[in-house]
Image (cartoon, rainbow, N blue to C red; front, side, top):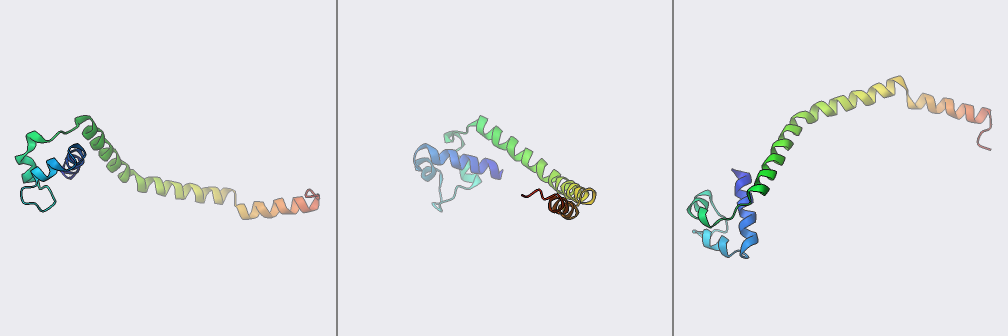
Length: 106
């Protein structure tokens, strides 16, 4: 309901520079309540294609939030595994010793 309310608010604001919004706001509090929307439902233009895209995006984002902790945990274990199998500090020391022994820097 919140997304639909926000989308209708955006569409109504874009139409008549707020004329429709003022017409719909019966109690003149600056906010359009769901009851005020229902009363003027025929005068609201809703772009269903945009609304559908927004709802699909919202659904996809809610699915990704569920998957995010699993991804973060896998990424942490991957980095820890990489460090265990190939520790950067030890390899750095070996590379430095080889470079100084064979005088590769000159």
